[in-house]
Amino acid sequence: VKKPILLAAHLDVVEATKADWTADPFTLRLENGFFLGRGAEDDKSGVTVLITNLIRWKREKWTPDRDVIAFFSADEESDATKGVQWVLAHARNLIDAEFCLNTDGGGVELANGKPRAFGVEASEKVYVTFRLAVTNPGGHSSRPRPDNAIYQLAHALARLESYTFPVKLNEVSRTQLERSAALQSPDTAADMRLIAKGYANSSPDAEAQAAMARLSREPSFNALFRTTCVATMLDGGHAENALPQRARATVNCRMLPNDSPAEVEQTIKRIAGDSVAVTVVYAPVPSEPSSLRADLMSLLDQLSVRYFPGAPVIPAMALGASDGLYLRNAGIPTYSLSAIAEVDGESNAHGLNEKVRERSIYDAVAFWNDMVRGLAVTH
Image (tube, rainbow, N blue to C red):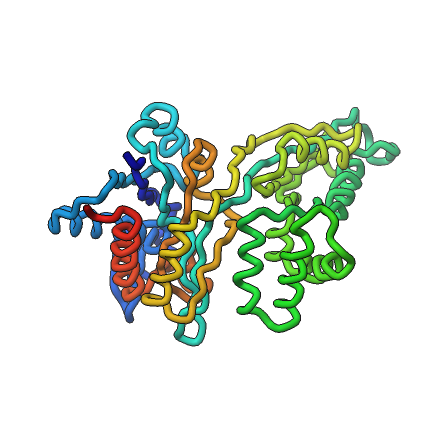
């Protein structure tokens, strides 16, 4: 008996201030070919796609050859403790599946009115936050000490700024480079192919290393290649005429899924030095990349030709996070592929006047119908 397929979307949305929007963010409206409202893209569109198909399959009395489970979570936009984490801890049997298809991620990029690429997220970077703190007896600002807490912290942050984590590619990120190279300029494409080939082993040649140095100057490529840690918040001191008794910084890391949390923490501590206390503020949830299933990838290639002609299917490692993080950690391979087509950045998810194309919703509904039927073939 085949294990079920899990279909996932999340019901919650981020906050929205009504006064900042041109209309009530929590009243869905249709204007100029777009649905507008908070969550229109993230992820009420996914909920709509799944609910519409569930109704269709019920009406058509479709009988798949395995169970198809729909899971609508809460709390995805915060820490998932009341959503997927709770379900996995208390009712795992309700969503246990061979793999999950998640509506929250991936999608189709449009350029010049035509499909350019169909992204399928099979991996995610792992979120972890550290606090760096320095304490000091302080004193009067007229008599500066050599062990100033703010300076000590600043020196540690300068060392962190200049540190680069090692490159580590996995199956997903390597395939992402290979399949998306054709969409780039000739020079960038050549560098991507050199990296994909050269970093397939632990000893990349000089050409691959040079290509890595060039592409790493671009933030999105750099984040794809390695774990990144960056200072995001800073505070220190208590009075303008007193030496600081404490200084603190928040450092947020986005770890590669195949990096060791313990090793990253030790690296941060080594960089910070003995005078800086390092504590974990938000603990990481390890999440191995999902293997690229041959049946899924083959079907997506076929469906992309039909629905999004000219758009190659490109596996991707998400730089953010979704419920897929926890599902993968629980042993349920997860693939995020909304099939929502849009121009890059046009939806403004989490921002003002969030929107999604009306036509993209209809196309995604039809795509998901064919995709799920193709993976759960009728008797």
